[in-house]
Image (cartoon, rainbow, N blue to C red; front, top):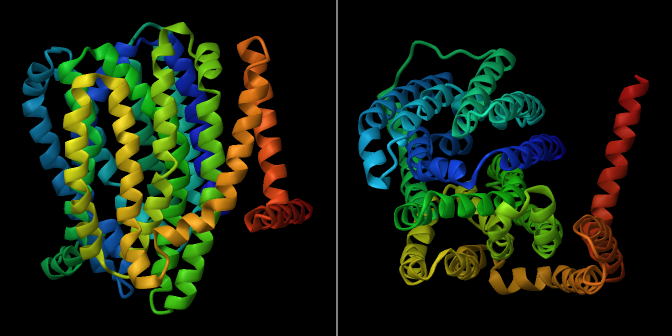
Length: 475
């Protein structure tokens, strides 16, 4: 968990800084053009991976035949998808009435076959719980590719700075994974192995396909009904809350899935670990996203300039929507860990009508109403996702809310102090600094008086990590 957190926070921190620099250099319409293609790449990546990563992790008696078979499958599908995107690129450009999308699609699509080479490499590292190597690889590739993107943006290349940044990150990460992992596929392809793994992965594929379509459908509708600039605002507004939320979600999913899977035959211990992870997730996610929502206005005006101010209300609503995402991810993760991908699919399909109806109601009223609807669906989805954990393990939505109650109260206390004091402070810079210090301080003090156990646990973990670092330095 420590290495996964270090790698994720480091790489996301670098991305955060680079993203701010790029946003100052580029226009909202540049981000809008990339946002128009988001759904095509998200679906493509999903089809290439096809749920086989989780299937390999979930399977206890996996073999080299399994690894090699999935490697060649991923590679074959990725090339087929690239060819499809290459030839339909003019149709995509025509749909959005943006001719420049033809070449953008064809170049950006190279990410798909290049990235497919690294899927099995990543899976092998997760299985042996090696999170140190991929953490360092990701951090390095993000730093180098981000620097390239900034140089190109400063030189006036516009949207192509984002394209080259994305491609260089994929290439670097793939090359480094091969170099450090030292695994090469054997000349084996087994249909029986593919069929066996597909029995588990097929449900995840369908569930992932539905979720990906729904999550990206907003971008399609906004891109079609509004201008690239409007979509750029929406795309950028999503990036900040999702950066914070997905960072924690990815850490939890990446680390907890192989751990929970290894405990699938010891249900009592698995539920105990699951409960602890739930509490520590809420301990970090809720105050972090709430504080960012409270300070969004001075943050955007100071760091991104006035041209990005329309994203402030979007960020605030999306922060409250995304603080639920990591909790829902844990509820879904435990279903995969016990091999119930069928229930995973059932839960995802049950949320589809809610998402579509909300989308149909909110899109005609503009982007602000869209993100409010997104918050509503995320809130309701939490109860849906918690249904089976409650039924199977006695850890449903009501119990989870009770477990979160002290954190909710501490976050409300923090919010009161931050709002009350920052309203009296002039200047965006002082508001941002004072609000951050006051928010962190009041939350930690409140957590101490509320006797939140996770505060003590984090303190112990920090002391242990510092002790290990000192010990390794002496050696």
